[in-house]
Amino acid sequence: MFLGTHTPKLDEKGRIFLPAKFRDELSAGLVITRAQDRCLAIYPRETFVEMTKSMVAAPTSVKQVRDFQRMLAASASDEVPDKQGRITIPPQLRSYAGLDGPSGTGGECVVVGAINRVEVWSPAAWEEYSAAQEDVFAEMNEEVFPGL
Image (cartoon, rainbow, N blue to C red; front, side):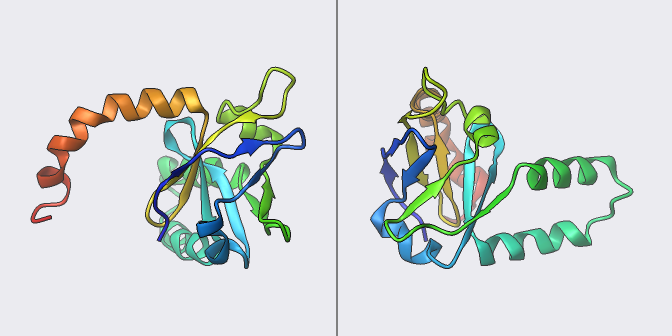
């Protein structure tokens, strides 16, 4: 399970150090892809495979199914962290999430544990998103997860 908020630096090669507490679960391999809300999602490879099984079973005759499959897979990158716990975020994904610094690479990012995945956000996008969700979060528990 992935929990917490971390602020690693994105280096000039587009790499970040995964938070130490996430490394064991991601050490065998991961998939990084675009997610909703202009952030990136990092899944353990096994979790991503399980998640996509339901997508494979969905009828590709439905346009929304095809669109979602394409958007998810086209930008996905299969990665293995290096011995220091770093992963490279491909340029198109850095651009999508607004992670490119003034020189095209490097800078700040926010890494958020999101239960079954890790999300990577630009600091500005995370700040805007989390500020907007504060009041909504306080009220959504009973609507989204009754009984919690």
